[in-house]
Length: 232
Image (cartoon, rainbow, N blue to C red; front, side, top):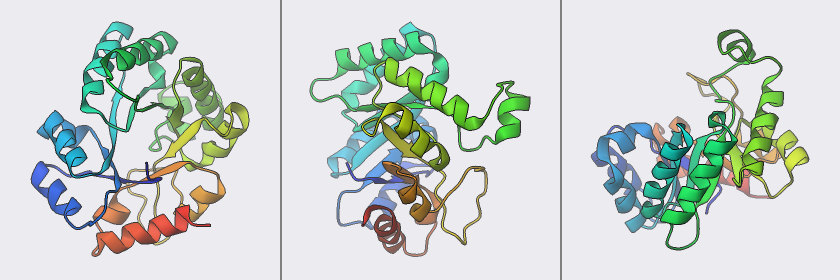
């Protein structure tokens, strides 16, 4: 799977496929709640048929039995990466992995857990949510729980990736959203970084949305970011 993932934050199938038609190669894409809830599983199947890699970003979080059923159902879509919220706890994550194995007919998708959303800053974590300590401490604790539950990696900000690798090993995958170019507005994100910083911090994958999808030349923007992040 390619390491630069494009977030398909479009409202419907038509806009999504029109965007993908600009590319003459298979790329890695993220399908999130907005698009999936509007178009349903068929949008995943269509994008897979077109030769793209799919990260299905639905952030499953519920009681263990429900999470298990959700992952069992989603396994039939044959996506390449799938996620859930670490906040659901160890039993939920373990149950979800059981469901994923039951529903998969071939190789399992890369299952990852969401740690701390990149829209959170320290004040939100401590004051609003009521979780003490630093964002990094919370991210490492949740990542450790995810690994113990059988997940293969986590979603975290660029700034937690290096420490997570130090604690949990290089093979434990870090998927990092909040990627912006130097001149770009951070908008609703708080912990953001450029592709170059993500590379320096050892991120395994980056997720890029508006820096590509809102560009006047999305294909060029994609390749510029890919080169900045992936090339030595």
